[in-house]
Length: 439
Ligand code: LLP
Image (cartoon, rainbow, N blue to C red; front, side):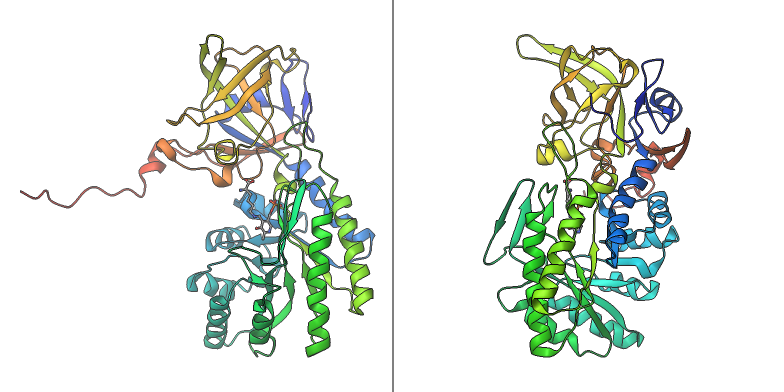
C-alpha cells in the first residue's frame, strides 16, 4: 500500500494524516471530508523553490490555484513564499481577502471581463498574463482611464502539446488560449504592447499541458519561446525579463504513475533555458512556473462513509459512498484513476474488489472501478487518495448535494478550512416564484 506525505497507520489500524486519526476527523467533521496534509504541500512547494535557489536562478513559483482555492490555502501559499496564478475575479477576490501579497499574483484567462481586469488594476496585482487581442485593447483602455501602468506577459502557444507520457508538436496549435508563435499572431501582439506607455511587457508565457511525466515537452517549448525572444531582441532590441513555462508536473494517482521529483523537472528546464540563452546571446530570464496539481494533489485525501452495498452476481460488487461526482468529477469526466483504502481497517489485507459508487443520480457516478480493498461494511470509512487537486475546486451541487467540508492537518493539529455546506446554504440565493399563472 502506498501512503503519501505524513500518512501512517496507527495502533488501532486507522489511517492517520499529519498525526491525526482520520476516523476521529470523520466523526468530528462528518463525511464526505477533504483532508489536506499541509506539511506535504509545504514540502512540495520547497522542492520547487529550493531547486531554483540552489541553482542560483531567479524564479517565481506560482501556485496554480484553480487546483484548490480557499482563504486558508492562499494563506498557506503565502507562508511558503509562493506566488499565485489566478484565473478569475473570484480567485483574485479570494486571494486578496486572504491577504495574499498582490504583487505576487498573476492573472490568467482567455476571456477576462472588464470588471475582472478593473479588479486586477485596483488590487495592484503583479502581472496580467495576456491571452488575446481583445484583452490588449481592454487593458490599454483601463490603464488609460486609471492612469496606471500594468505589467504583462504574453501567453503564446508554442505548438507543443504534452499529455502524460506523450507530447506532440503541431505546426499550428489549435488552442483557445494564447497567441500562436508560428503564424504571426505573437509578433502582432508584441507590436501592439511593446511601446505602449501604460504597459510593461515582462516576457512570455506558455503552458503545454497537465499531468506530464517527462521533461522533453517543457524543454521543447522553452526552446521555441526562447527563439522568439531572440528574434525580438535582434529585430527590436527587446530584452525579455521573464519566461513563464506554466504548470503540468505529473503526480502519482496509482501505481502506474511514475512522476519525477520537483527538482528533476526544474533542473532540466533550467538547463535548457541556460543553453538557449547562451546560444542566442540573451540575458538569462527569470523562470516562472505554475504548478497546481503537483503542489496539492497528493496532499488531499477524501473520506467517505460507506452506506449501501450491492452485489450483481457474477459481475461485480458495489459499495456506495456518501459523496461522488459532486465532490470529485474527475473519474466521470476524465476516466481518472484513484486508489483507496478502508481507513478504519488499514492494516487488514486487501482481499476484496469493489466498485466504489457515488450517491448521485447518474450511472456514470463511480469513483473507482474494481478497487482492491479491505473487506468493507456499512459504516466503514473509505479514504480515497490524491484528491487534493481539481476535486473540491470542481465540486458542484448536482442533486442539491451540499459540498463537503475541508480540513487541514499538521503536527497532530487539525482545523476547518472550509465549512460543510448546509441545506440552508443551498437555498440562500433562491427566490420564491412571483410570476402569476396565466389563465
Ligand atoms: N498554468 C496554466 C496556464 C494552466 O492552464 C494550468 C492548468 C496550470 C498552470 C496548472 O496545471 P497543473 O500543474 O495543475 O497540471 N481539471 C483538470 C486539469 C485542468 C488543468 C488546467 N490548467 C484535471 O482535473 O485534471
